[in-house]
Length: 326
Ligand code: 13P
Ligand code: SF4
Image (tube, rainbow, N blue to C red; front, side, top):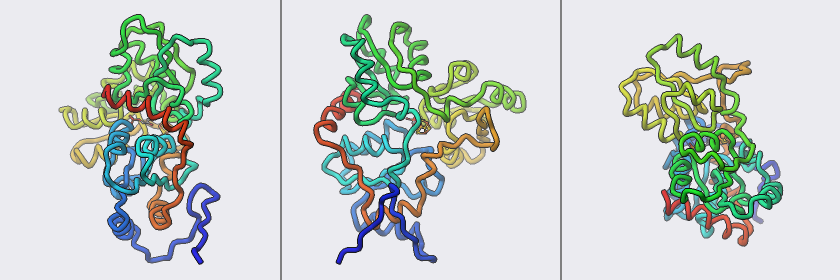
């Protein structure tokens, strides 16, 4: 009889034999099952190192759309794995822990968003990829931090726009594009919203030559003191091209793993949150991805992302429009 696997907690809850070589087993099963592991830059260093591809939200969705692997194992947060399933419905999309959510996606529920949109019937709806499938199904064009400005700029002048769910990114887009009448949903990411400008200025005083790199999910006052504002991939790319030796990193510190790998001689300084009891500003959801969970997920091919087909097809249109425009 086939062993039943307990995934009631959102992940495979099983003890792993001591002495299991997790890295070797993951590599072996990946090959045997024709699986690909996609990981976001904010995951733990050892998770990024076990992945076939590490990237920002845009690159990860592009990979998910084009891979010929039979199984996609997504090490990131729920909306990212869901996006992979929306784009590759015929593939098995696995996620090591289904409870790894996103405070930004949680700040915009589909039912509430649908009611909100009734006040804006003639608006084009642009939503950040950090949303649930239900919100994407109500969206005309999805975007990521890599292409949000370009997508809004590509819409004809005078076109009415609703942007959701991140108020900081929305206000940043307004400031760059001058589309001041864009209606912005009032959501935020708890990680990026709690960086304080005072902490950054203190670090800047201690490291006067350092460049300040910020993600557009940060508050306006933080973006105002940044030398560069961009997606995780754009910030990483900037470090590689810059002649500076020191960088103050105002985004989730997981990205520093790739920054150090690319430029081991440079110094990358994480910024603590404003209410710091510890020195880090981790996204706890991203850190739910562990090698143990990846091993168990590959072994049992559970838990799997499952989406209702009608809603998936509606959400896919908005992501395909983004991919065409990218
Ligand atoms: P990127 O698309 O820039 O990787 O951002 C994803 C994210 O969740 C930022 O908090
Ligand atoms: Fe969501 Fe913020 Fe975590 Fe990014 S850092 S996944 S926006 S909670």
